[in-house]
Amino acid sequence: MLTAADEWHVHQTPEPIAVSGTDRNFYDRSYFGAFDAPSGLMVAVAFGMYPHLNVADAHLTVVVDGVQHSLHASKTLHSDRATLRVGPVAIEIVEPLRQLRVTVDEHDGLAADLTFTGQHFPIEEPRFIYRIGPRTFMDYTRLSQATTVAGWVSVDGVRTTLGDGVMGLRDRSWGIRPTGAPDPQPYLPPREPQFAWLWTPVRLPGRTLFWHLNADAAGRPWNTRATICPDGSGEDGHVHAHGVMTPILHPGTRWVAGAELRVQADDGTDLTLSYAPRTHLEMQGLGYRHPVWSHGLAHGELEVAREAIDLTSPSPDELHRWHRQVLCDVTATDAVTGDAEHGTGVLEHLIIGPYAPLGL
Image (cartoon, rainbow, N blue to C red; front, side, top):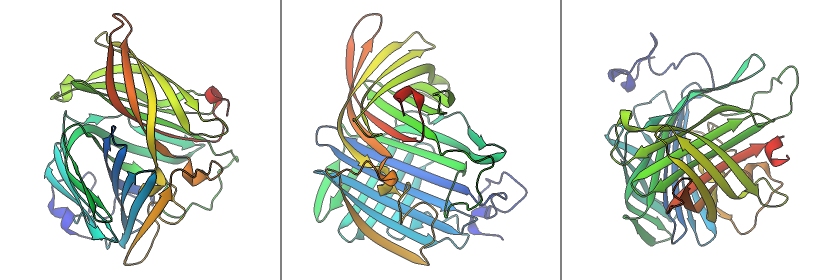
């Protein structure tokens, strides 16, 4: 099955690009985020392709004054992996690994035009491989990058310009993770669902720190790393580190109310980061575990819909509302000198099932 994507010299197997191996859960995905701490504005865009399901989807979500406004779009892919557009949402690769532009044509009161420019060469995180018994649950690669943001977002005719001082992020991941309709075949032997994920990029003066953790029910990491990326650094300029986070939960929930992260780097950097939340967004606004717009679900030739979530009315018993990104003020204290720096961080978290470090 030849498609326009086959003209690009990017093949990794003897197959055409449209085939993407043999696992129906193969996906290829982009995420963009823009965060303004003083105002509490949070903007995020996601774009995914699922070649074996022949589906592509995209989402815009904007948090303003305690309400999360989302635009969801889904289309039949027709094996066209060269067109980075789903309905009103499109991605333009201006300069690979450095600058990308995201546009959302006005639809039902939501629109955006944002350009993300990298502040360092992207980091490649350790490959995420996780099996439940013999069955592969996840196997993917992800890159992450701090960016500047230029452009605007509009909600119901009110346009907000983003620029200096706005924290920008993007990531790209591709490989295998559950997509589309759930697999009806149970795991054998049976096991209780369990997943623990913490991810935090922190913008500090002159550099960005990344840390993430995937851990089992006992808290043992199966994928984790910290990386410090000085502004302007190339691939060889990243500083690798080790980090340990102590989160605090809102009582009776799985939502993070604060945290402390200790990071010790190969270059001698030794920091303790304290997180003070400002506001949050729910990742269902980008399709994650959404009961209707979950990644890879089929909605026909093209379907676009708007949704509003009242963030002041939480529902801690609803699983699809557990996955959050929290916008935080971060204080980073040097363990040697005692000097403190102030920055902005995003703390994403999803904890399902038992997790001993938090008494769950």
